[in-house]
Length: 439
Ligand SMILES: NC(=O)c1ccc[n+]([C@@H]2O[C@H](COP(=O)([O-])OP(=O)(O)OC[C@H]3O[C@@H](n4cnc5c(N)ncnc54)[C@H](O)[C@@H]3O)[C@@H](O)[C@H]2O)c1
Image (cartoon, rainbow, N blue to C red; front, side, top):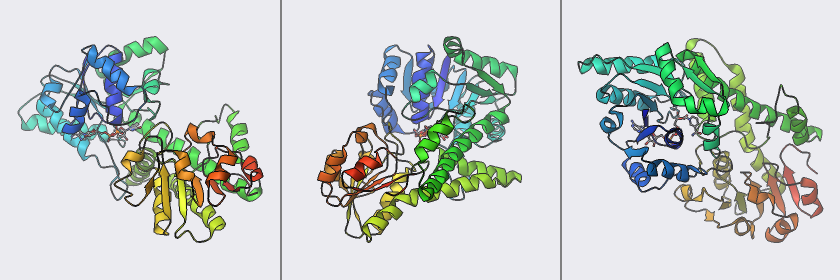
């Protein structure tokens, strides 16, 4: 099939590469000229394991091209995926202006009836709005093209995006006609054959809601375990053992039960906020999600409370930050919890020594006065304390003796639970370990 993907950011580019891997001919279109230029030169502008190689394979097979010209991209396409950003506005509602702009562009340039698939995360009833925008623009141009809008929410996780897309747990498609479902089934046929993954067919509104409900549920799981972590700290219990034991219960599952700094990234914070907002707009107060958000805010303040307890005043102290990306295996710092920790440290007059294996490049402008460190040892050397903000594997192998030797003051705040607090204490370090009693 010939397919157009509009917006080649994290979701869009993964979609392009994976659809080409399934044998489709895919054009990625983006209004960011420098992004398209870099993709044409074979450079993927963000970190996602395996994506540069898969994109290159698609280009070399003659199945993938990139352009800034929607007319060229839409010519002869059967399906157009909308993959543009849907950031939060100041009031928490999602900013859907890019989605509307894309609808107008599609109506303007599509020469034949298209299936327009929303992959961007949007609130329920956006499909109806897109259909309306398509119809208005078509009518304004005197065209009578009958496009169909479907919802095909994306569930990929940054860091494992290819695996998630090529071996999905399920494919959700919301469409209001059998014809549109038939087209979308053809898009995913090779995957359905290969992995027998379920194709969940719903109407458009239900599919839109599935995405917000899924992300809100996962965020709530994270907040739940963070609340349990606070109780464990007070009770002298161990949240990691609690989570492991809970996880053995198939009804609960172990995933997303890691206590820490709370959820972050480009999706959960804005999606939970958007879900609360759209529910309120329709007349339902989703109080449970507001509590999820409150616990998440509180989780981000945990490291500084521990540091103040151990170091008293933070002004003038050098603090090593291990990890800034919102999770390992990505360089994405959008809404990363570490940013709030760093901002709070700087506001108290501390000096931050930053290390992250891949995300530092995005931080130089935001933190001109920070000390950027090439490796974790460099960050730790001479620091008055360390906070582990992202659980990169390479930090796990740092031994207690090394910490003791490198740090000026032996103060460790392990906000991701990567080190054994008993071993740290035995090595003479002062330790705050998330969800565990203070020794
Ligand atoms: N990143 C994730 O892990 C993830 C996972 C699931 C769903 N989503 C959702 O997918 C959507 C996209 O997320 P992302 O992380 O890929 O965003 P992104 O910011 O990385 O990419 C968006 C791209 O769209 C382009 N764009 C914006 N307006 C455009 C227009 N009018 N015409 C053409 N291109 C345009 C931008 O230049 C950019 O390249 C969001 O709604 C997000 O919530 C993201």
